[in-house]
Image (cartoon, rainbow, N blue to C red; front, side, top):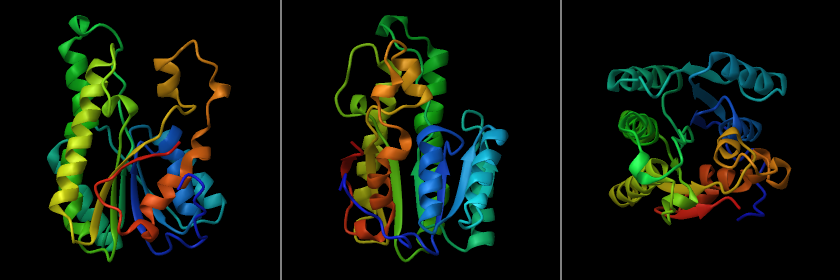
Length: 245
């Protein structure tokens, strides 16, 4: 799967929503999905970054994307309901959702955790994912084959000292993925998680400031598994925890 070669038209006629699409892995995934034929809905909090990704996709001649500026930390359930209605009106269905946006929080001893940081991390990494997923499921059911993909982490599968709230949020994400995969078994929706591994991103640099980023793979280099899980080649894969490296 790490050597997976996606067909050029793998995602043709599919509409895919990517959160955190303005930078890092979300940006790389959005461009990769568009390159393989998808109409991508770019969701993020920084309009300037989203517009830059929009321009890259359009200039490459891929299907024209859409932009949804939204700060997951402050978004309400009504915001997600309104978004779902707009997507249904414009596209009729949703074929894929990549939950990519995350907050790292503050790394350090558990006894030094502040509740304000916990609330922010859980709001973005968990509560927002719950509300967004809940809103999108009805229009994902209108797809012939839909993929719901959660971004996990190695610390969401094996806890690690000093990763407190981030690890907790990712363990919860894995639990959500498994619950949904079981619930939507034998339907048109499949649900999986992906651990991107050590990748050259801003979040990685914040977590490991002394690390040489040139020793890590760029987001563009780990897209094989992201494409595989979003395309119909994986339509029988459900409830799995996959790695991108």
